[in-house]
Image 1 (cartoon, helix red, strand yellow):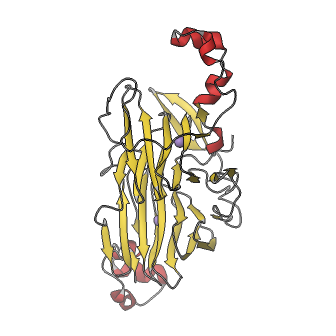
Image 2 (spheres, protein in one colour; image 1 turned 120 degrees about the vertical axis):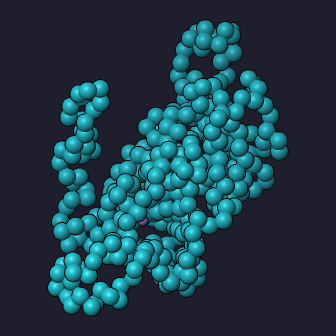
Image 3 (spheres, helix red, strand yellow; image 1 turned 90 degrees about the vertical axis):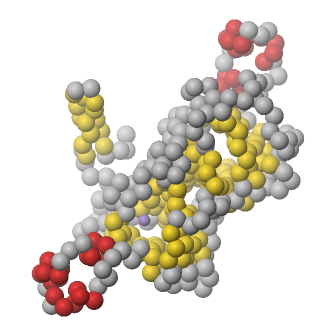
Length: 368
Ligand code: MN
Ligand code: MN
C-alpha cells in the first residue's frame, strides 16, 4: 500500500510494472534522514538477548531493505521460523553461531559460523539460529524488503500453538495428547542446553542441498586493495545461492573516501562496524544531505541515488554494506568523467578543456 510500483497489466505471460507516482518519501523538497541509530534503539529484549530492527517504521526511506541487530546468550536459540516476504542475509560480528535451514527439495544444511562469516537464506526457507559455546553471539541480519519486520516472522511454536490438537494429531499420525504441553504462544528465543560441538544428524539423516548457505567473507583475500583501504565483497558470482543480495565490508584508513558513486541496480544498506563516517546523499533537484554515522548506526541509500562514504575518525574503521541484488554494479564519478572526452566536459561545465587533462584517467573507487 505504500509502494510506488504497482502492476498495471498482465500480458504475454508476464506482468509489467510502472512507476505510478513518485515515491513520496524520496521525492519531497528535501531529502529525509537516511540514518537510524540501531544499536541505541530499544528493540525486543529478553534477558541478555535482543533483536533491534530498522524497517520503514524506524527509517521510512529504507523501503527496499530492512536490518536487524541480534544478540543471543549461551543456550539461546532463535526458534525455527521463516520469512514470507524477504530473503535473509547475515554477517556474524561476535561469538559462534549454528544455523540449520530447509529448502523446498527437502534438503537441510547445518553450518557453524564465526565472526566475518555470512549466511544467506532464500525467501521463505525455514531456519533456526543457535548460539554455540559459552559466550554470547552477535550478528547483523539484512532483508531484501524494507517492510519486513523481524517481529512478524512465521514461527513454528506460534503455528503449532494455534492449530487444533486434533488437526496436529492427524497431520503427524500421533495422539492429540502429544501436543498438550507444547507452547501456546510464539517462543521466539528458545532456551536450553548449549548445542553439541558436533551437530547431531536431522531426523531424516544428512541430506545436504546442492548449494551451500555459508560464505566465509573475511577469511578470503580482499576482493580489492587500495591505498585508502580494503574491500571484501561477496555477490552471487562467488556465493551462488545469494541471488538477491550482495555484501561488502570496507575497511578504510582515517580520511579515506569511498568516492561519489551510485548503484544502477540496487539500494544500499549500511551498518557501521567501527569508527565514524560521513555519508553524503544526492537526490536530484539540488537535494543533498550529509549524515554522520557512528558505530552501530544504520544508513540507507535508495537505488540510483548518488552518495559517498568518508572515514572522519582517527582510526582505521569498517562499514558493512549490503545491496538488494545478487549482481554488484557501481558507477563511480571519476570513472564517468574518465569515460568522456574533454570537449564534452569543457562544454558541460563551461571550463577550459585543459582543466580536464588533470582529471583521473580511470576509476578511483577509494581515495586515501
Ligand atoms: Mn530469520
Ligand atoms: Mn555505494
